[in-house]
Amino acid sequence: MHELTDNEAQTRFELIVDGEVAAIARYVLRGGRRYFVHTEVDPRFEGQGLASELARGVLERSRERDELIVPLCPFIAGYIDRHPEYGDLVDQPLYQAMSRPR
Image 1 (cartoon, rainbow, N blue to C red):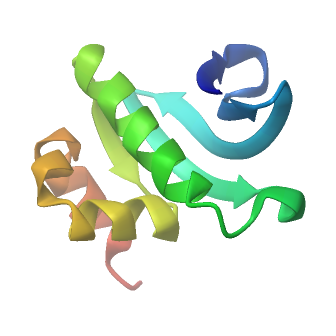
Image 2: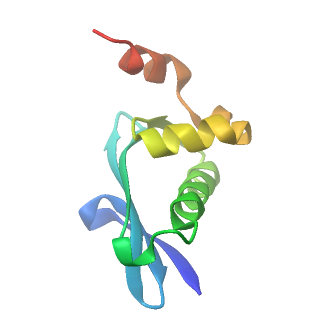
């Protein structure tokens, strides 16, 4: 059984598999936005689709909380590109401004 938890003390979502942290999505909260900055799967759990499960879970949690996000993590941004039903969660003007090369 997989469980998604928000470990606010470590500013990360954790996907728990069989009692172990199998994958994490780090974030920063600022200005009423959740900035996703890094996604990682423990090597022992790779190849099981857990990163996608984690991405879907954190995006659904953001939808439930009615919060906008800024997907700075390439995995989360790519997941949203492949699943446009989550595009409405992205603060597009802020994301575009931060994604422009300087």
